[in-house]
Image (cartoon, rainbow, N blue to C red):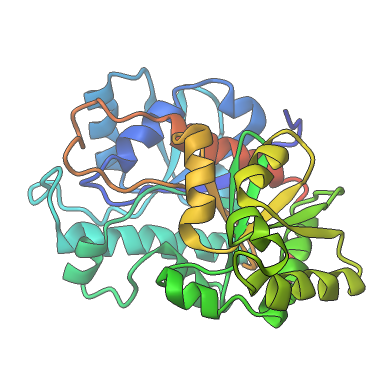
Length: 337
């Protein structure tokens, strides 16, 4: 547990979803206040309504800047953008009003982070349909942060129970992902992963690359990708001074990382790493967006309109999201990758 309490901005997310509920339920845990100074960027009336629905014993205190926050357990400090008309508010429904408000919460949080007024951002879920209804020109958090933070091609990392997972490819078909598994890309990503961990203050950076084919291809018996591209990419990264290993068969590398053999794993495609993380602990899998001028952690679930405002949503992921931001924030360095 860190003794340095940094200010963590928490944009409230889509008000019609579970974001407000899981935020207030997380901030009802006193332990968080020993680790960080949580600052909600949102709408004060929505937060009061969330407190009423969840029954947590908290008060809302509106501040005009992070410096005004008291950051004492029992009171939620909130920068109130007052951008939601409660008469038009409908829980669990797609809304242009809520989509626009969610974007404004994020934009203000980024502005605070870029100005150095907060050390990190811990994001709650937003809804793509609501963003579209509001004509917000982004489909999600990553695209917003990439533009607002001036950081092209940010690098996603999952962390769960100490296991860290990076992704060589993201939202593309498996067939397209394989075409992207070039030695040059493997080398580049291993260098980027190492720098990302360095910025997070991780001193030991032993990186494993997951294999693609069964048994990492068995020397070409079950596919040539490891022989022709992946292993040569690892060797190039080693020549760059990266402490890299692999390809390590995917059926064992994540277990080995979970037990401390490696400090991080580079997953070759989306589901390979997602399945490993979420099977380890679905609710405690937290996403970190690397390559930004600031630290950003995020829950790895959606707005859950179907259960929103019914006081049944679990706050575990949001709690872990804020906690992880608090853990890395004191060590995080702002210099660009």
